[in-house]
Amino acid sequence: MRMAWTIAAMVAAAAAAAAVAATTAAIPASAASLRHDHPLIGIWRIALPDSACTETYRLRADGTTLVFSNEEVAESSFTVSDQPDKNGFYKQVDTITKDNGKRDCSGEITKPGRAVTSYVRFNPSGNLFIMCAEPNLDRCIGPFIRVRGLGI
Image 1: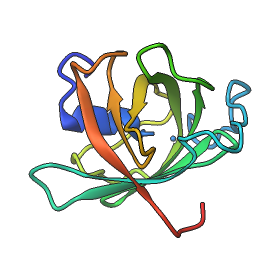
Image 2: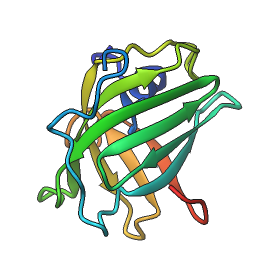
Image 3: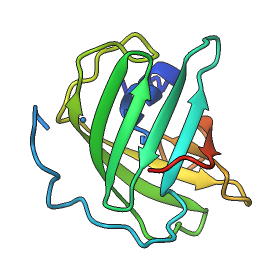
């Protein structure tokens, strides 16, 4: 899956994005609270190319995520670096803790317990980001667009 990094693979990895424990496990000890102004906290949406499907990611300061993708509803815990590296990438590790067992936008069913590492890079405004397989721009998906005005 990590080899091709198609949009479906990245979406499955993110479900993630960002980006759901073996069944009903609690948040792992590795998930930690983020600083209140971390740029990743918030609601993000990505429209998938060649599809009418969109995904919405609610990334919370407590290190948990709620994802809506087609019929899928998934939860995860994540860690993310506090500051970007010298090239502007934040390292994120996301582990699915729960999934409703329904198909996501890529047609896949996400399995809980899988941990995925990705690298997030924001545009200067902080209202868009891309998610990459490595800390470079070679294999990325996006943009993820910040959704304003909805509670997380």
